[in-house]
Length: 133
Image 1 (cartoon, rainbow, N blue to C red):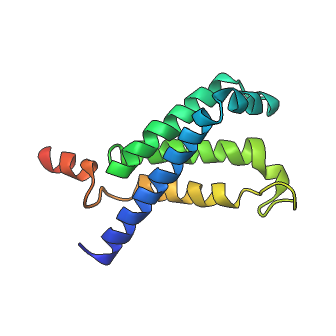
Image 2: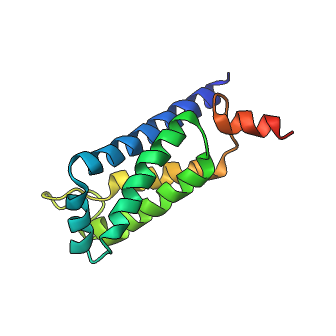
């Protein structure tokens, strides 16, 4: 395995774990809290369920490398939504009280990266693409 492949593998697994953990946290903390926050932002509360499920299931799928491009694209869209609906007014680094959108911007860039790269070693995406050849 080349260094770049190893680095991409590590990035994919950590990226997936971060979303998996965020999805778990939304349910453990009471999804009703997330629903309330979405409604406070002027978003439909039901969107909180969709986001939490995408983070939970999508994060797990990324860890094993299944549906990497699609899941990463969904995560990128979620990050755009988070930036423009909740974080933009605080600025890039925040306002001293609330966090800015720097983390969401990093996650957005990582999501776009995985949309653009080819399936990598040690992923189910790669194994499935080899079977289809």
